[in-house]
Image (cartoon, rainbow, N blue to C red; front, side):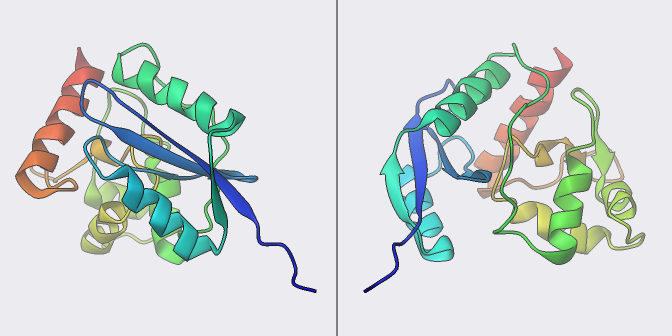
Length: 173
C-alpha cells in the first residue's frame, strides 16, 4: 500500500499592486510571491519542491491573504503568521530571519543584514539570499538597500525595483 502524500494549501488574490499568491503547509506559510508574479508558477514550484499536492483555500492562507492586503493598504505593520522555512536552508535562512527583525519603516544595508545573520562581510551573499526569498512581503526583503542608500534590486528587474520603491514609500508615508 502506498503511503499518503501530504498536501499544501494555496490562494491567489488581487491587490492594488497586482496579483499575489500564497502557499502554506501544516507548519506555516511556505511561499508568498511578489505582486504581479504568476500564481500558477507558485503552486507548481511548491508541489515540486515539497512533494505535496495542492488544495485551494484554507484558514492559514486566508488569514495570510488578509494580512498581506492589510499590509499593502498601509493598515498592518507586522505580520503575525507562522512560517515554514523548509524551502530555505543555511545562510539564506539566517539572512531571511535577520531580515524579519528590521522594523517597519526602517531599512538596513545588505552588509548590515549579513552581519545580523552572523556573517559580517558577506553583503553579496546576503543579496543573493534576499533575491531568492520565497516568502516575500512577509519576510520584508524590500527593507534591505545598498550601503549608499540607493534602493538596489528587487525581483523582476526595473519593474521590481519600482515595486520595491513603492513598498518603501508605503512604509514611510
